[in-house]
Image (cartoon, rainbow, N blue to C red):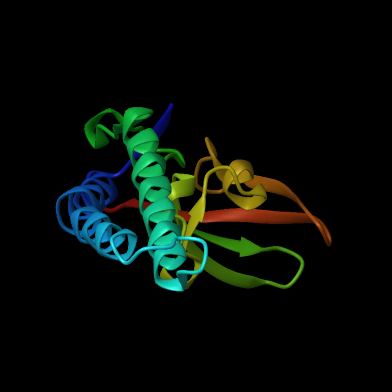
Length: 156
């Protein structure tokens, strides 16, 4: 079971709806047109249309599986005094005295450029459940990072 923010759940549902209602009919139509052109063994357009159909079906199934096994996070039920999903955490790397801020999200929402890390990442997992002032130790490829939690806020 994965938990998603309402925003991300809606984005995935919208993409799925778009693929089913807009993209797939066009792909199926293109495949039918290419198929009608005769010999499929020597028809590059047919092979390309078949590949597009496969990619579209694969993406549709993937998104359906995500939604089937996901639930929207009830933000009211999340603890406000400790790091949890959708927490925006400011922490200090004690080795370098560098401050960083990340939002803890599900793996399907991870976006480093937007400051979102997965709760399953080494840093995300180490921060989960910690309170302000506590030290989290994250096992990363370069060794162990010691991170002090400076603040925890929640975005809705």
